[in-house]
Amino acid sequence: MLFTGYGVGAIVGNLMADAAKDMLGGYVNVFSFVAVLSVLGILVAFVLLSPPVADISKTVTSIRTRKNQLTDEILYNKDATNGES
Image (cartoon, rainbow, N blue to C red; front, side, top):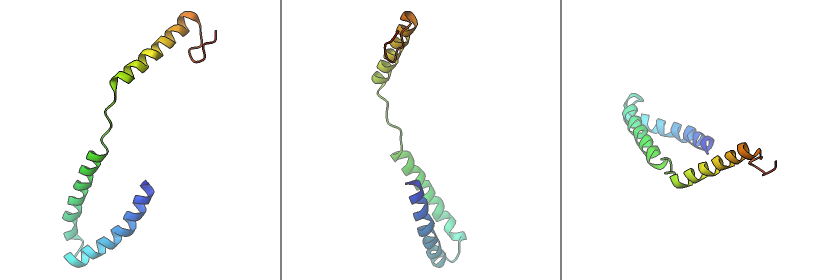
């Protein structure tokens, strides 16, 4: 997905840069437009790519289960993964 976006950006970006140069009279005048688009892209990334909120109860249960397995392994000399002595 990343390389597809990179390829599309390389093709479309060149065409848009040329059109912007023709409309605005040079590349220097395009920098402010590109800066605004960059800030917009950053904002979209922060909104759409925010990490999911973890369900803490599942995490605590998982930690307690693993702790019990390790305790059994230490106390009873058992392999916690398959229950063998």
